[in-house]
Image 1: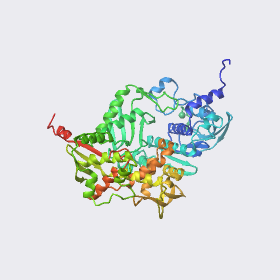
Image 2: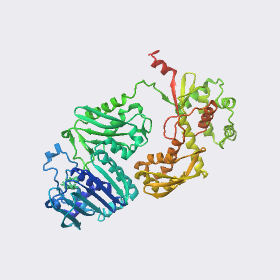
Image 3: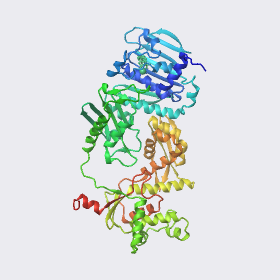
Image 4: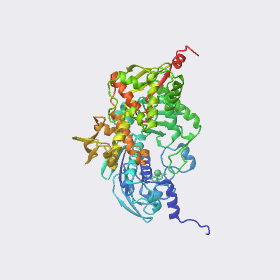
Length: 593
Ligand code: ADP
Ligand code: MG
């Protein structure tokens, strides 16, 4: 085929492919334009996850009538005139591409009135032809985008389902709202109101409306200045961690960016205060002189390049670390995690010593009156006799003989169980252990099809828009694990039944906290794992808070744990047992070098 220059329409659609990948990208570009127009109020409305309709209205400066037709042309921008302007850019947009791109792959109309003129303009774009009418309007701009990707079927086909897109857009709007607390954002989807931020220029108030009171209670403010950068915003306390990174949000010069390196630097600054599989929360703005940044790296403008990147990352880490350290004081004893490998090694060692030591089964029969054959669990001896499951027996045997030489010292802080061994102490986190036991118990019950729902007096539970969406989308999954509810309208559900796990009926708070954890699109993509996620969160909530345990209860718990398939960690991956060796104590107390 001979070489030819593509016609404008085809070239436009190809270029649009880079900027407008999904409805979220449209929302992002329109919001950025509205912010650049110095709006104080921006309203977003979407239908079918934005695939059918996206409307963004603002009360900003508007566009003067003579400029209106230009706005939809490629490389038409009021924000820069030459490349050098990028060095001191103070707007979010600058490429003059978004409106042209959006118009080439959807049906667009716009109403706008400039604050400098008496009369406004209404524009309809049809088949790349523009119809313009003069009309009196209120000051600001409304852009309506319908039937996105109607003329690029390949792109249309690859769009996610509306509920997933909805969730992504809520997340995006929340984040943009957090980077501009001076603007009041509202969002509606399918005529449901999903979000409204106050726009009073107080970041904490904005965070409050998005994440709620509990979240705000666990934040500390940070203001760190170390040339050339300045960090402001809020950090979650080290004691408040989430199982997802959804509540980590960083802007550079109030620009919404996606930069894993910076978020990683912040996370690293929390050092060993972070539990396995847990992540700190933070909402930060980092101000860096714009001459040190290159924002023109990608058409979507969500990537940046920084001059002296390693220095900047180092400073960020330093600033955050200082704040976190203010909270910590006692030096930490290095603690070893107990794993099946380490237990196996000790077990080998013990067998070699071949001195008879009573193992936990003997101790249990001597010291605990709890019969072995409870909860329908198989008697250990039975496994041994019938040799039904050699592996299970081996595991039990190793785990219990590992504890065999240890004596129960105490329960401390109503939370940990302390055992003393020959040359080490062991700490068992009773909650983590209980969680593990619960998790395996629920899994077995569901697998065996046992009924676990208990009817309750109908409870009307008000949810956040994101939560409501999940409850509607994943109703089947929640029902499988024993929750029973109906749609009640206005982001409210009517809860009629809750699951009973180990004789504890789960309440609506458990349901709320489960959904909170599920609000991670990464997890949502693996819906097969959803049920597991729900059970995990349910277990976490089922375990009671600080609780005094009798010796008998302790032995009972340890016994149940020993019957678990994976006794060394809770189902979230936190360790159930930690070990501190006598040697480590001696080192810490400087008895040895
Ligand atoms: P860019 O934002 O990179 O300049 P866009 O294609 O997004 O390019 O917008 C083109 C121009 O249209 C902007 O430079 C701005 O002058 C004008 N414009 C777009 N949206 C708005 C709005 N909501 N309010 C005022 N002016 C707008
Ligand atoms: Mg723009």
